[in-house]
Image (cartoon, rainbow, N blue to C red; front, top):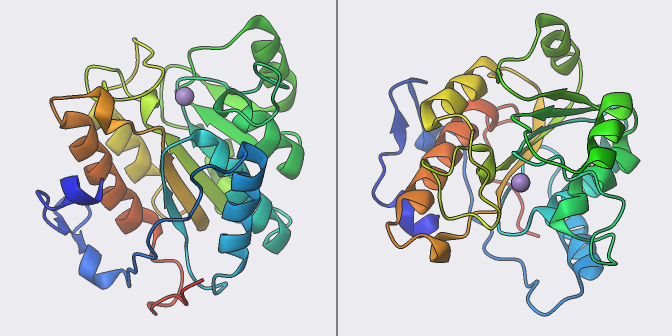
Length: 248
Ligand SMILES: [Mn+2]
Protein backbone atom coordinates (compact mmCIF):
# COMPACT_ATOMS: atom_id res chain seq x y z
CA UNK A 1 0.00 0.00 0.00
CA UNK A 2 2.88 2.34 0.76
CA UNK A 3 4.46 1.58 -2.62
CA UNK A 4 1.14 1.91 -4.48
CA UNK A 5 0.50 5.27 -2.83
CA UNK A 6 3.42 6.78 -4.79
CA UNK A 7 1.25 6.75 -7.91
CA UNK A 8 -1.43 8.85 -6.18
CA UNK A 9 -1.64 12.56 -5.46
CA UNK A 10 -1.79 13.61 -1.82
CA UNK A 11 -4.68 15.96 -2.68
CA UNK A 12 -8.27 14.72 -2.87
CA UNK A 13 -10.47 16.81 -5.18
CA UNK A 14 -13.62 15.24 -3.71
CA UNK A 15 -12.69 16.31 -0.20
CA UNK A 16 -10.73 19.43 -1.17
CA UNK A 17 -8.11 18.36 1.32
CA UNK A 18 -4.47 17.30 1.22
CA UNK A 19 -2.56 14.74 3.26
CA UNK A 20 0.03 17.45 3.89
CA UNK A 21 -2.58 19.15 6.11
CA UNK A 22 -3.37 16.11 8.24
CA UNK A 23 -0.20 15.87 10.35
CA UNK A 24 0.79 12.42 9.24
CA UNK A 25 3.53 10.15 10.57
CA UNK A 26 4.42 6.64 9.38
CA UNK A 27 5.40 4.74 12.50
CA UNK A 28 6.62 1.76 10.49
CA UNK A 29 5.76 -1.90 10.79
CA UNK A 30 4.87 -3.65 14.03
CA UNK A 31 7.08 -6.71 14.66
CA UNK A 32 4.31 -9.31 14.51
CA UNK A 33 5.85 -12.03 12.35
CA UNK A 34 6.02 -15.40 14.04
CA UNK A 35 3.83 -14.37 16.98
CA UNK A 36 0.82 -16.43 18.07
CA UNK A 37 -2.29 -14.51 16.92
CA UNK A 38 -3.29 -13.77 20.53
CA UNK A 39 0.17 -12.30 21.20
CA UNK A 40 0.00 -10.29 17.97
CA UNK A 41 -3.36 -8.85 19.02
CA UNK A 42 -1.83 -7.84 22.37
CA UNK A 43 1.17 -6.32 20.59
CA UNK A 44 -1.17 -4.12 18.52
CA UNK A 45 -3.03 -3.15 21.70
CA UNK A 46 0.22 -2.22 23.48
CA UNK A 47 1.46 -0.18 20.51
CA UNK A 48 -1.74 1.86 20.40
CA UNK A 49 -1.80 2.32 24.16
CA UNK A 50 1.67 3.90 23.93
CA UNK A 51 0.48 6.50 21.41
CA UNK A 52 -0.36 10.02 22.43
CA UNK A 53 -4.13 10.25 23.07
CA UNK A 54 -4.48 13.04 20.49
CA UNK A 55 -3.21 10.82 17.67
CA UNK A 56 -5.67 8.98 15.42
CA UNK A 57 -3.98 5.63 14.73
CA UNK A 58 -4.42 4.12 11.26
CA UNK A 59 -3.50 0.45 10.95
CA UNK A 60 -2.77 -1.26 7.65
CA UNK A 61 -3.07 -5.00 7.10
CA UNK A 62 -3.04 -7.74 6.69
CA UNK A 63 -5.04 -9.99 8.95
CA UNK A 64 -8.34 -8.57 10.23
CA UNK A 65 -7.76 -10.25 13.62
CA UNK A 66 -5.58 -7.31 14.61
CA UNK A 67 -8.60 -5.00 14.76
CA UNK A 68 -9.38 -6.70 18.08
CA UNK A 69 -6.10 -5.36 19.49
CA UNK A 70 -6.79 -1.83 18.33
CA UNK A 71 -10.29 -1.90 19.80
CA UNK A 72 -8.92 -3.35 23.06
CA UNK A 73 -6.61 -0.34 23.45
CA UNK A 74 -9.14 2.29 22.38
CA UNK A 75 -12.12 0.87 24.32
CA UNK A 76 -10.06 1.26 27.50
CA UNK A 77 -9.45 4.88 26.65
CA UNK A 78 -13.02 5.47 25.38
CA UNK A 79 -15.53 3.36 27.35
CA UNK A 80 -18.39 4.44 25.05
CA UNK A 81 -16.60 3.38 21.88
CA UNK A 82 -18.69 2.27 18.90
CA UNK A 83 -17.22 0.28 16.04
CA UNK A 84 -18.19 0.58 12.37
CA UNK A 85 -17.01 -2.31 10.19
CA UNK A 86 -17.20 -2.38 6.39
CA UNK A 87 -16.81 -6.05 5.48
CA UNK A 88 -18.32 -8.68 3.18
CA UNK A 89 -18.22 -11.15 6.09
CA UNK A 90 -19.84 -11.04 9.49
CA UNK A 91 -16.71 -12.42 11.24
CA UNK A 92 -18.92 -13.26 14.23
CA UNK A 93 -17.82 -16.86 14.85
CA UNK A 94 -17.08 -17.76 18.46
CA UNK A 95 -14.03 -19.62 17.13
CA UNK A 96 -12.69 -20.84 13.81
CA UNK A 97 -10.67 -24.01 13.27
CA UNK A 98 -10.23 -24.28 17.02
CA UNK A 99 -9.00 -20.74 17.59
CA UNK A 100 -10.83 -17.68 18.90
CA UNK A 101 -8.11 -15.55 17.27
CA UNK A 102 -8.95 -15.77 13.58
CA UNK A 103 -10.06 -13.19 11.05
CA UNK A 104 -13.36 -15.14 11.02
CA UNK A 105 -13.91 -14.18 14.69
CA UNK A 106 -12.77 -10.55 14.63
CA UNK A 107 -16.14 -8.89 15.01
CA UNK A 108 -17.13 -11.30 17.80
CA UNK A 109 -13.97 -10.31 19.74
CA UNK A 110 -14.76 -6.65 19.07
CA UNK A 111 -18.38 -7.05 20.22
CA UNK A 112 -17.16 -8.64 23.48
CA UNK A 113 -15.30 -5.43 24.21
CA UNK A 114 -17.85 -2.78 23.25
CA UNK A 115 -21.17 -4.53 23.90
CA UNK A 116 -24.61 -4.91 22.37
CA UNK A 117 -25.73 -2.63 19.54
CA UNK A 118 -22.38 -0.84 19.52
CA UNK A 119 -21.07 -2.71 16.48
CA UNK A 120 -22.36 -1.49 13.12
CA UNK A 121 -21.70 -3.81 10.17
CA UNK A 122 -21.94 -2.43 6.65
CA UNK A 123 -21.80 -4.30 3.33
CA UNK A 124 -22.06 -7.73 4.97
CA UNK A 125 -23.21 -10.54 2.70
CA UNK A 126 -21.59 -13.73 4.00
CA UNK A 127 -21.65 -15.79 7.17
CA UNK A 128 -22.92 -19.07 8.60
CA UNK A 129 -26.45 -19.29 10.05
CA UNK A 130 -25.23 -18.85 13.64
CA UNK A 131 -23.42 -15.65 12.73
CA UNK A 132 -26.54 -14.14 11.16
CA UNK A 133 -28.58 -15.12 14.22
CA UNK A 134 -25.98 -13.46 16.44
CA UNK A 135 -25.91 -10.33 14.26
CA UNK A 136 -29.71 -10.02 14.37
CA UNK A 137 -29.78 -9.95 18.16
CA UNK A 138 -26.53 -8.20 19.05
CA UNK A 139 -25.34 -5.94 16.22
CA UNK A 140 -26.58 -3.41 13.70
CA UNK A 141 -26.02 -4.53 10.15
CA UNK A 142 -26.73 -3.51 6.55
CA UNK A 143 -26.21 -5.71 3.51
CA UNK A 144 -27.16 -3.75 0.44
CA UNK A 145 -27.23 0.03 0.74
CA UNK A 146 -24.07 1.34 2.35
CA UNK A 147 -25.62 4.57 3.61
CA UNK A 148 -26.67 4.33 7.25
CA UNK A 149 -30.11 5.45 8.48
CA UNK A 150 -30.23 8.90 10.09
CA UNK A 151 -30.83 7.49 13.60
CA UNK A 152 -27.72 5.32 13.46
CA UNK A 153 -25.70 8.16 12.00
CA UNK A 154 -26.81 10.42 14.85
CA UNK A 155 -25.76 7.81 17.43
CA UNK A 156 -22.36 7.52 15.83
CA UNK A 157 -21.96 11.30 15.86
CA UNK A 158 -22.53 11.34 19.60
CA UNK A 159 -19.51 9.35 20.65
CA UNK A 160 -16.09 8.01 19.78
CA UNK A 161 -15.99 5.66 16.79
CA UNK A 162 -13.47 3.10 15.58
CA UNK A 163 -13.67 2.43 11.83
CA UNK A 164 -12.51 -0.86 10.35
CA UNK A 165 -12.56 -1.41 6.60
CA UNK A 166 -11.99 -4.94 5.32
CA UNK A 167 -11.08 -4.45 1.67
CA UNK A 168 -13.18 -7.49 0.72
CA UNK A 169 -16.30 -5.39 1.29
CA UNK A 170 -15.68 -4.28 -2.28
CA UNK A 171 -16.84 -6.41 -5.14
CA UNK A 172 -13.81 -8.54 -6.14
CA UNK A 173 -13.89 -6.82 -9.54
CA UNK A 174 -12.46 -3.74 -7.80
CA UNK A 175 -10.10 -5.47 -5.37
CA UNK A 176 -9.38 -9.10 -6.31
CA UNK A 177 -6.30 -9.30 -4.06
CA UNK A 178 -8.01 -10.37 -0.83
CA UNK A 179 -7.95 -13.68 1.00
CA UNK A 180 -11.71 -14.31 0.83
CA UNK A 181 -13.25 -12.58 -2.19
CA UNK A 182 -17.05 -12.39 -2.00
CA UNK A 183 -18.88 -11.45 -5.21
CA UNK A 184 -21.88 -9.15 -5.15
CA UNK A 185 -20.32 -6.18 -3.39
CA UNK A 186 -20.25 -2.43 -3.98
CA UNK A 187 -18.06 -0.66 -6.48
CA UNK A 188 -15.09 1.44 -5.43
CA UNK A 189 -17.09 4.64 -6.01
CA UNK A 190 -20.04 3.29 -3.95
CA UNK A 191 -17.70 2.65 -1.03
CA UNK A 192 -16.07 6.07 -1.30
CA UNK A 193 -19.48 7.75 -1.32
CA UNK A 194 -20.49 5.83 1.80
CA UNK A 195 -17.31 6.94 3.56
CA UNK A 196 -17.82 10.56 2.53
CA UNK A 197 -21.28 10.43 4.14
CA UNK A 198 -19.60 9.54 7.43
CA UNK A 199 -17.24 12.54 7.30
CA UNK A 200 -17.38 14.36 10.60
CA UNK A 201 -17.82 11.29 12.77
CA UNK A 202 -15.60 11.43 15.87
CA UNK A 203 -13.24 8.69 14.68
CA UNK A 204 -10.51 7.88 17.23
CA UNK A 205 -8.84 5.10 15.26
CA UNK A 206 -9.19 3.16 12.03
CA UNK A 207 -7.81 0.36 9.95
CA UNK A 208 -7.79 -0.95 6.41
CA UNK A 209 -7.18 -4.69 6.42
CA UNK A 210 -7.15 -7.95 4.47
CA UNK A 211 -5.24 -6.39 1.58
CA UNK A 212 -3.22 -9.18 -0.05
CA UNK A 213 -1.48 -7.61 -3.07
CA UNK A 214 0.43 -10.84 -3.79
CA UNK A 215 -2.86 -12.43 -4.87
CA UNK A 216 -3.41 -9.77 -7.55
CA UNK A 217 -0.76 -9.55 -10.28
CA UNK A 218 -2.60 -6.60 -11.87
CA UNK A 219 -1.70 -4.36 -8.93
CA UNK A 220 -5.16 -2.78 -8.85
CA UNK A 221 -5.89 -3.99 -5.30
CA UNK A 222 -2.92 -2.19 -3.79
CA UNK A 223 -3.68 1.08 -5.52
CA UNK A 224 -7.39 0.81 -4.61
CA UNK A 225 -6.35 0.27 -0.99
CA UNK A 226 -3.94 3.19 -1.10
CA UNK A 227 -6.58 5.54 -2.52
CA UNK A 228 -9.15 4.36 0.00
CA UNK A 229 -6.63 4.96 2.73
CA UNK A 230 -5.98 8.51 1.53
CA UNK A 231 -9.69 9.30 1.57
CA UNK A 232 -10.14 7.68 5.00
CA UNK A 233 -7.29 9.70 6.46
CA UNK A 234 -8.62 12.92 4.95
CA UNK A 235 -12.18 12.19 6.11
CA UNK A 236 -11.38 11.08 9.64
CA UNK A 237 -7.75 11.83 10.48
CA UNK A 238 -8.17 15.45 11.39
CA UNK A 239 -10.10 15.24 14.66
CA UNK A 240 -7.01 15.64 16.78
CA UNK A 241 -4.78 18.72 16.92
CA UNK A 242 -2.48 18.75 13.92
CA UNK A 243 0.62 17.61 15.71
CA UNK A 244 3.02 14.88 14.91
CA UNK A 245 2.09 11.91 17.12
CA UNK A 246 4.65 10.45 19.52
CA UNK A 247 6.38 7.34 18.23
CA UNK A 248 5.70 4.20 20.30
MN1 LIG B 1 -13.99 -10.00 5.25
